[in-house]
Image (cartoon, rainbow, N blue to C red; front, side, top):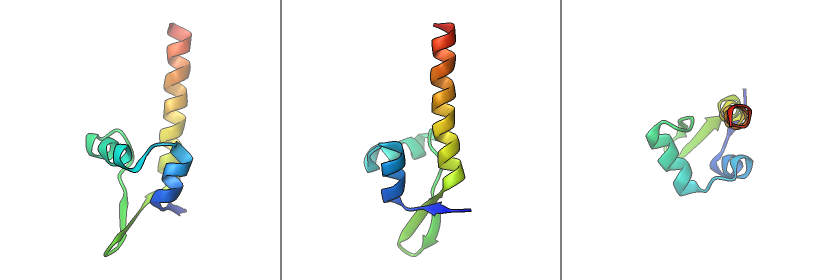
Length: 65
């Protein structure tokens, strides 16, 4: 299991920091885990799963649209 830091998550998803946290608060993006007093990270498989779900959603829209 690999933990991604914010910079990697932003790079991987192309979502800005503010939007990322807004999406987390809304339940639309995997929640971060606390790594220390001032650091958080995201489970890579959860971020990858989120990306895959966006692709699946896009493909379903294409098939039904």
